[in-house]
Image (cartoon, rainbow, N blue to C red; front, side, top):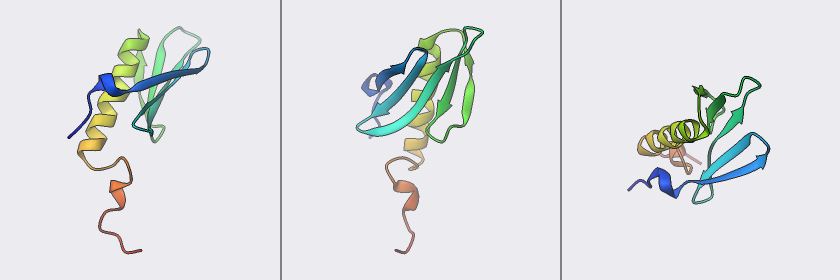
Length: 84
């Protein structure tokens, strides 16, 4: 079961810099550029793109996190099947 983007908690940790989490898991961040655009990054700091609004950028981060969650990449599931 995946959580919706409404379950994402966004914190403004510095002017123009927002960090997203869900259930304690880091999802990614949004950094406002000098141009005024909002640059979105996923949990691995991979750039998702530049967006005109903060809402568009945070939605992109939440959507990527949901895709990664579906693929079993969040919350340590990417270690599944490895020998300790």
